[in-house]
Amino acid sequence: MRPRHYGILASFVILVLVPFVLCVFYLFVIADDQYASRVGFAVRSEEINSAQDLLGGISSSLSGTSSSDADILYEFIQSQNLVERVNADLDLVTMYTVPSFDPVFAYHPTGQIEDLAEYWKRMVQVSYDSNTGLIALRVNAFRAEDARAIAERIVAESTRLINDLSAIARQDATRYARAELELSLERLKGARETLTQFRSRTQLVDPSADIQGQMGLLNSLEAQLAEANIELNLLLETSREGDPRVSQARRRIAVITNLIEEERTKFGFGGTTRADGTDYSTLVGEFERLMVDLEYAEKSYLAAQTALDTALAEAQRQSRYLATYTNPTMAQSSRYPKRFLLSVIAGAVLLLSWALLVLVYYSLRDRR
Image (tube, rainbow, N blue to C red; front, side, top):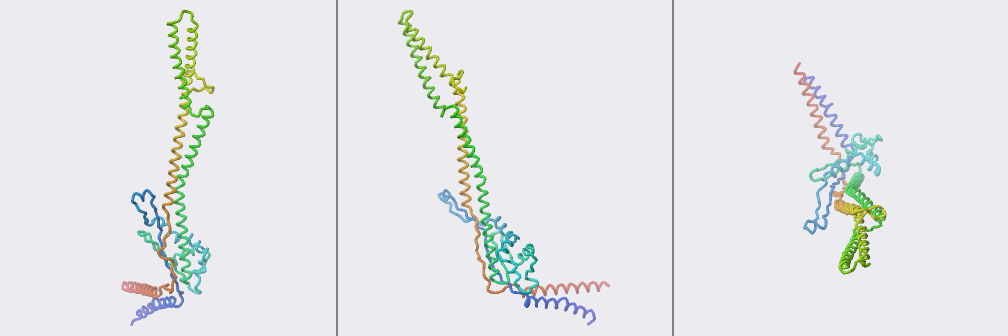
């Protein structure tokens, strides 16, 4: 063997054997056992069909996972917000610093929530299948009861988040319908108040009914006028000159004619006889306009009420909930860290790194 061979052997011992032995010693002697609690859940949305759908032969169905809610939940589990909530209830710092001496796997408190959130991602492994919407968690801790307690707390906070999302969705679904209903109600109140003011001002409940009465009176006067004209003609044929009955009949005809003219003026065919300066044609036009406004306001209010009832029914029919298909488990044995696997990986990395350095050395040596 030449001197360079001894150097390569020494480098193998220093760069491969010694670090590998130290790594194995740490993993099997110093590193504390970790226990894993597993839990799995999904966000489900249950939609119950209405009675009309059931009569039509469409049965109730359980829809698939809401992908958007599952994505939100996936990000929430890894968020600092969740870490703060769980830490406030369980004191994660104490749980993660249980090993008396573990420089690699144990948590080293810094007092910063950001550091705890980073360590959380090492201890809580989340897997999410976007196709099925299933979320699976593996929660590690240095005690089995701690791992299960953290997993249960994650499920509780996730359920709370989904409930909040459902409440927000229901509020959004009914907020615009309520606003439209309030607007329609105000419009209806305004239309009724305007109609009431019109009736108080004109002393007429319904101008159409009043016109019917006036028309009846006008028809009666016209009938009396025709009868008076007939009587006058008969008197002119049979009476002598200067008969007082003729003058009396003419005065009667004149009175009836004046009454007819006065009644006709009330319908807008001349001047007006109302004290407020309006005739029946103007009153009827204003009344019909107010009735059209009132009818439109009533239909708008009924439509808004129907829309609100529909929105409330839809909000009740669509509800999200967290379906747990695997409850938090209690570990009976330590499975982490995977000492043998980590030892093999460390040995392979060290050996490959040393071999690469040796190849580089011989490559540089051959160039000289």
